[in-house]
Image 1 (tube, each protein chain N blue to C red):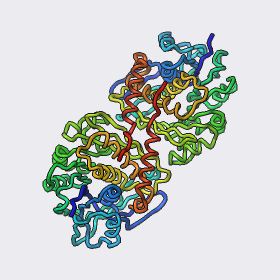
Image 2 (cartoon, rainbow over the protein chains, first blue to last red):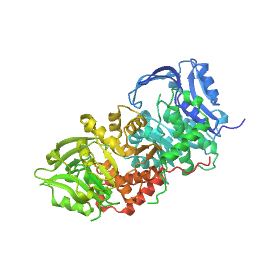
Image 3 (cartoon, rainbow over the protein chains, first blue to last red):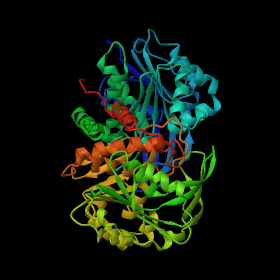
Image 4 (cartoon, chains in turn red, orange):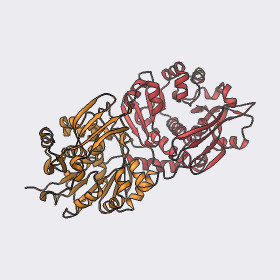
Length: 309
Length: 309
């Protein structure tokens, strides 16, 4: 059997989400769900996560529909991770109503053998101790990106710093970057994270796009202006999953900054589709052709003409 | 005497500004000051405004240093407009401590004859009634851009709507765009403003750049990531002044969308210098060569490579 080129670890959840326009319950969610679905447009992707014995067969079928490899999906006795939240009028700020960790509380990820040689790894937002545990299981020198959240910066900073030292790329949102580095200016934040070890730092700014920092300087990654946002949940995970999928697809021996820029643009495009519907519903209807069209539109929007003046 | 290619109306003030790092008093400020200084790198620019008899000769000399035409500057008995404010830790949000309108309260702008044939006009943020009064005084078909603020949207909407109907371009920040159109999504906001008459709408998002809307679609204008912000006051005015100056310099018979994109990029570049010091202090040291270098840097940062994948 062919080794996977990318696997992704993170949460798998059942969400209840209320936006100013609509309330939906029993939605397939979690960072692994969004990221793997987004990556699947570019490469076959493995999911590493845990669900309870209440996890609906229909959701498992949804994964298979995206061609996601489920060898890394554990099913444990108990309840699947559940999250419910409500978005404010801006469709950006949100309030968590309830979190039930369920079987996610005792998650110990185990990497299936065919995943161990994958050249690309996305360590989604889980306890950094578990991220380290997974890094111990990989073989070779994969390109590893890590995502995290304010919780781990606050309660597991030493482990998180160890993870950051060992990976190629860190993705954070602007608030997390400031919390992690105790600086305000994002250039200074990024420099501080780069100094911890990784070659690349991506600071995500939601609807305002993202910034890629490296030894080559700064690259500004535009967000696609979405006509109608239905549910912003998972946008960051779609972004990360898609750019890792794009990188994995290219099979480039070495990831470099120009390739990363193109990958991040694909991340923006897929994320912009993701928020057009709840859960993975828009991604289920999405084609690579539509993604490429939006990438081209993003290029047109963000490429200033040659300056003859 | 040669007619001016651009004039700008707005406030001229003496500011007291406190940032988390520094407090400065008796600063030359106001939208006309920032916008004319920024425009002056590209074209000789006329200022239309009012000051009191307390306006320091040193400030007048500062205007002359930028080559600004002061024929439209009225000096009235009384105090110059004064504003004092304090910035929060993010160097973005600010609180006004005091506003003294002084002679600005009874400002009735009068256009000097050599200004009347200018092909470019920037109606800075003043009472829309006065903006209309000025539009009555122009000859020919100049390219007119208008800036405004929440105050006028709230208390002078009918006049403001009349102005918007008669101009070529409207610049607003995101909050103002939402207030004016009672919509949240910026694409919808822009569409609603375009429906009021102007050919172009620019929505300014501060450190997140700006968006240009027209019949040609959307263009994303990046903000230059500034290393160290000293004082963000006037950034929007520098942006508007510089892009109008750039347009005026080209002498293009017709302003079109590609030219506007280039102009806006120059606006971003000049604004990014403006915030590096208080008042116009950084602009006084600035060269066109430095502006062009930052424009090129912005291009490099925001132009995604050709997609071969």
